[in-house]
Structure formats: structure tokens, C-alpha cells
Image 1 (cartoon, rainbow, N blue to C red):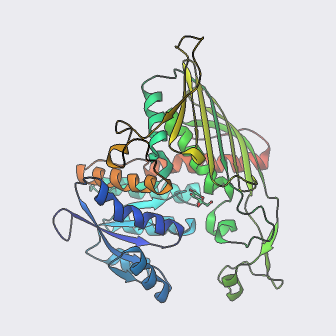
Image 2: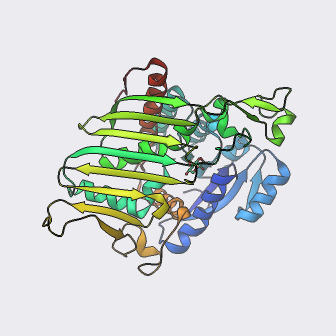
Length: 393
Ligand code: SOE
């Protein structure tokens, strides 16, 4: 890498929720895992001078830049970590790749299929020069999910018939909850569908090793107008009306059926209106030889039904995924000492840095992100047409 030998210098754009999660990952990964390159938290970029300086000092970044362009222009930066809303992903990621920087980009990859396609083309050109790109579907790196993938790949549940996936939150069930950027189509691309539906689409495709071929679905916006957040009154949001309220132009909830190329049938639900459910990612896979079930609200556990067992004693087994033999776990605590939400981000950094050092393309790739984007677009199109929509391979 540039700068010092064995160092990977990172520049992060954005420092809100995802920036904080990524910062802890860059800080902790080398403290718990033996990494082939040492991540240097070189700089964080953001437009608000005072806030970016405060964020750098709180989160552990060496320096600041007041624009992503300035960050990308720096010779000492090897990797750009994109933690901004979706409307800026394509521009930043493509510029960074063209400048020869590796890229880690938050999900969903982009706000449209067209943007995602342009990002894939940029990633392919960059890969030819040894520059790597990864999209941050971090839940793949929860040990119980990684174990589920392993069991499917080993054939332990046989041919997959059903995928049942839900992502349930409730943070905007109050109609007076403000109109944040996540509720603006221009910035977020879509609502629950792209923000959290994208995660379960990625997880379903990752665990099964299959892709979604066709979908039929419905989007719903229950609350059509909300109070503008404080900064929107200054004109930042672009949706400000005279009443101090603005229209919600994204979905609050999405539900769809899917057919996988390998023959499985999928049922998906993503909502921010599941009162009482905070971050419930539930996924169940039923195959010819067995089943797997996971719920993020009990994230250290994987339920496994092995259909080859004696029927008199067979049943779902609750596997506490905290043994050193389980994916990623050996680096953490003794068995039974559970891990949390942030560890997926740390594992993401570990895998990315390892792949960069080995000279291989990390996953999920931008092409994987594009595949998810195509499913999102097909669900939206189906909601409008009330018909099944194909998802191009
Ligand atoms: C908000 O809905 C959010 O932070 C998502 O943007 C994340 O991707 C998800 O992991 C948790 O919920």
C-alpha cells in the first residue's frame, strides 16, 4: 500500500450512525484480529467544519477534510469508506475508484439500477488494476448468519424450498416522527424497501447461494406527511413547505413474493411500522433435508432442524454460535460470552483488509449490490403494475 509499509490508510466520508459504526470497526479490527495490513484512520470528511472536527476527535480519526473531493485527492489515502446517504454513493465511489482507491460503500449500493450499473463498471475497471470494491451488507458477517451459509453450502438442509424473510422496525410508527433523509426519495432512493428490505434480500441470496428471478409485491406509505426536521427549515431538505410539514415520498412498508432461480419460493416483508419490533431480522430457510431459522434480536443463536435425525428425538436445535470453531468467534471472548451489532462491521473490515492484502475481490461485490438493486427496482415496478416482474440476471 502507499504511505507506510503494511499500512492501509483509510478516509471515511460521513460520520453519522454508519460512520460511527464503521469507525469502531476500523479501530477494533486490528486489536482483536491479526490483519495483514494495519488500518490507519487517516481522515474523515464532512461539510460542517465544527462537527467534522468533533467527530474526528471522538471517533479517533487523525485529520479532517471539508469535502469528499479533498479526501479522494489525497495521495496518502488508500481506501475510501462511503458512509453517506444513497444519493451520493455513485459519485463518490466512482471518483474514488478512478483515483485508484479501494472502496467500501454502505448499502444499498445506490439509489437506482443505472447508478449501480455505473458503479459496477467502475469497480470492474479498477479491479483490473488491483483496486477493490465492497458493498456493506454487514449482517452477512454475523457469526450465526455465516454459519447458516456454511450449513447450506455443505448440503445440510438439502434442496431449498422456502425462504421466509422479515425485517421489522417501528421507529416511525409515530406520525409526528420527523421527515428524516431516510424518508426522502431524492436522498434515500426508497423507504423501508431499500433501507432494510435490501438487507434481507442480500441475506436470502447469500445464505441460499441463489438469486431471485421474479417478484410480485406491494409498497405502502401509511403516513403521507410529516413534520420537517429542524435543519429542513433552513432549506437543506428541499421538501420544505410553508406549514413546516413535508410529504413522505417513500414506502413505509414493503411486502413481496419471490421466486428463486433454483426453484425456491420466497416471502419477504420490510417495515418500519411493526410496533414493538426494533431491529428484528428474521430469516427461515426450509430445505429437503432440514431447516434453519435466525432472528437478529437473538443474534448469537441459530436454530437448526436436521431432518435426518430419529423422529422420536428430532426437533429444532438452538445453537449458541459462540464457539471458537464458529465463523469469526475465535478472535473474541470465551464460549457463551456473546457479541453484538457492531461486531458485523468489525468482521467486514477484517475480510476487506484481508482480501485487499491477498489481492482478491471481496464480497459482497458491487455486482452483488447491483443484483440487490435490481430486485428492489422489480419490487417497486411490481407494486405499480400489480404484475410479476423479472429480475435480470
Ligand atoms: C435504519 O433503518 C437502519 O439503520 C438501516 O439503515 C441499517 O442498515 C440497519 O442495519 C438498521 O436500521
